[in-house]
Length: 472
Ligand SMILES: [Zn+2]
Image (tube, rainbow, N blue to C red; front, side, top):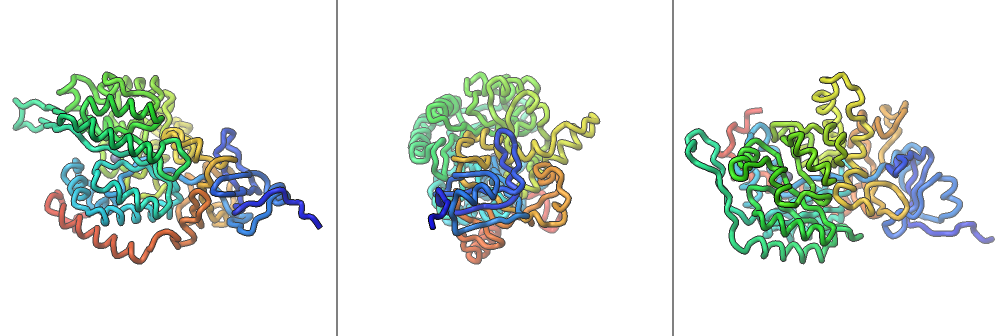
């Protein structure tokens, strides 16, 4: 007897499918069929069972299947030291930079594995890495490839010396910035090779990007030529901007312009730009980003842990700016990050104006999936569960008591969900986290490496901290 199947799949995924497609469909008794890492069908389970044959099935009637989350901003090599940063403002040059600089390439690779394990455990299938140190690049790429998590990787090396005059004792002093001759050209040549190796819009797991990390450390030449490179490759240009008071003061002193105004003057604000943080963006600067269709990477827990401001996220979105959520090494848990966004913006902008619809919980799920993919310019590949896209998804246990009376799954995932319900995290059809085990990470070795990394960075920065370790 001939079987009625028309097609073969490598994997079936069953459950309530939260597609995050353009209609934001949730298929209640749904199924995805996966072949060669790609979603080849999405629909009702009964329909797909008739037309596909498959040996491997994950999920189940009670499972909830969502697109893999996107951590839109992080730095892998900060993973060992993150616990020493809270309450230490301003701490980037004092703690983060030295703790990253002392890592050997092997230790940088271990930091990548540690971060990936934390992110996969919380349903993240794509991270966006910003790398400043060429000595770590190959190790980071190697570890990412070994783990097989998806990554938008922005590389770039600072090419500018600067002096920030901000202390009262420097009252007659001025801030200044001076490019180191020829370094922009040399480093952007490396970035060009990197973009050729890892096409930003390609189907591989690594998507290259341009890292002009900040106005202080990168020269005008770097920004101008880096933006050209980003346009040519249709890559993103990633810039920490309007991050803290020191940066705003510096820009006003040196260029008489606020940070995003300065980027505008350089001609680099367009749809390829990702403004990272932008917590101190003025209304004028929000309009500059909106008119250019630039994106925002927003890390809500980082705002509380290591910054001194919260961006006016509802204002950014009302202006038409797309926003992507990042963990930025604080929490490394997308559920915690989504919940934090819902709560801090609710308290700051919603409660304050008695506007219960200031930012809906479902919109926050968008910022962790499809909207983040749009900001990172990888939405043709990932961010939603649709035919033709990569099979990047998370299977959650929907039988947990807090989902038994679910009324609106996307909203309730943000309000009540947690990483405890995650059963599998899958990237390009490959299971990378499966109920406590990591098929691509040696977790026992990682436990040892993480301890070694943590004590090395602790020894390096302990005497630079304001507080002793016994202080909460
Ligand atoms: Zn950053």
